[in-house]
Length: 229
Image 1 (cartoon, one colour):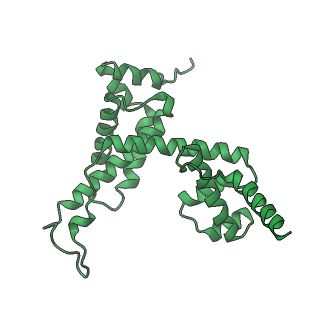
Image 2: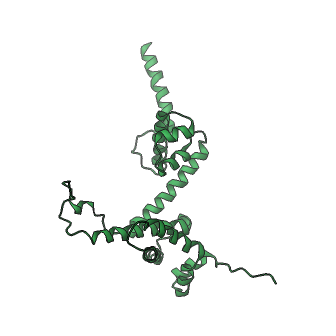
Image 3: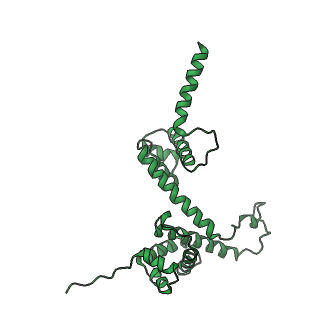
């Protein structure tokens, strides 16, 4: 007789049920395989080498994720739930570890040994879930924009440059992967950031779009040529 494999209920329905006040959906979401594994993996990674156990970190992450869900901070239109929940969980765990470190500080008015920096200057602000959600949304939108630009300009290597930036690679490493010079990487990175800024309406009025700069340069050269004549 063939075995019947268990299957998690649709994630979107679970989320909607929980938002609507179904307490049973909370337990089902906590046991949802992909979500649970993602949070556990993040908790293990973030607490490596720290005194906080990954179990406590995971519990804190769950609480923050469900608080955000209860406040309806997650919108399906903004992106997939799992990456969003993973980011909220990561920031929650980082904040937990920061607070744990603060317990060992005798006084925030003391200077860091060998420096003139006060301990109070190194303490991060209180965890702001709304800010985390907004940053998460912005990251998703930027990733989508870069992927779209990479398809629109496949020879510019935008996606590879972005991935290299996230991975902490140097211009030299990225240049070697793209087969171009470091100066070309620098130029393309400025070009990419300008396109992103233009896409999100961050350029001041009057600033030229990246694709307009070449035309403007050509026009200036023609103007100077005419003046020489």
